[in-house]
Length: 105
Length: 216
Image 1: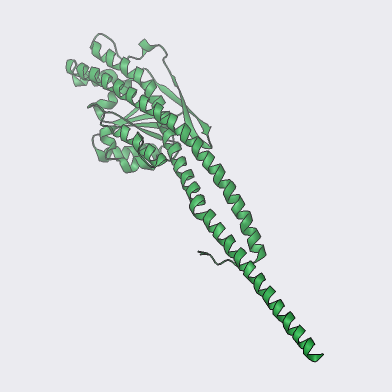
Image 2: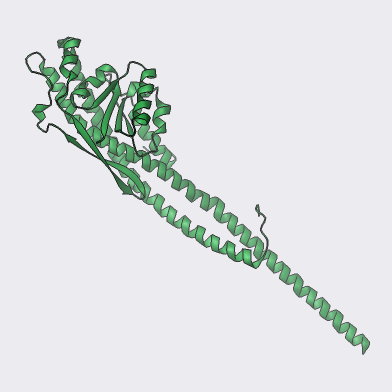
């Protein structure tokens, strides 16, 4: 059976732990990068969805981009405690731009 | 502009004509594929936009409640309360084929289906805000799953559209004009050869006739 991972600051992921998701608190970008790599590559596709908190994701652009074109895992940005940073929106924009050639939104 | 050296023979001409026909058909098919992908993509984008907004709003609300809870309760207490989940989620994944793009479809099963069963703590020592936060989070979670599915589909579709668009353009602006150019070149060359043969024959005929008349 597949699992869902949540990667983010300790306070953000706490709530998701209660929902029964696998949470991976990370205190800094370096740790987050390490964890993401472990989750996406070394777990043998165990994690189908990885939610990453936005304020960590901004440092992990390179890692996240690598999994954009493969069917699994799906790396989805979620807002942190400070509210949405607009990174999720800009990912949407980027996809539209890639497909259409211009930003039509 | 015949970049590639083509030998102006009838055989090559026939081959090129065949290739042009295939290229034209491929171009038409790919163009149709691109249009249909684009239509699907626009639907997905719209859905994604809505879902993202819903998830972001929902999570902001949940976190606000959580913040309130954390001001009322001590951090240790809060962490302890959430440490051992009673709920667990199992995820299933199948693939759906949209225009030969495989996009994931998720289905999930929770261990406890009763919404009041999700709280992993006794109510005596925790604040009501925590219950509130968890309930909101649980509610937003379903949207989060759908968001994951839609966003992944969107990324995969975008990638496929980009590829298809490149192929269409390569066919339309490179392959097909080049083939046409080569075909024109060969046709002209063949005609030229034919003309020169004809002229040569006339010339020879003249010479032969002259020779014949002079002798007589």
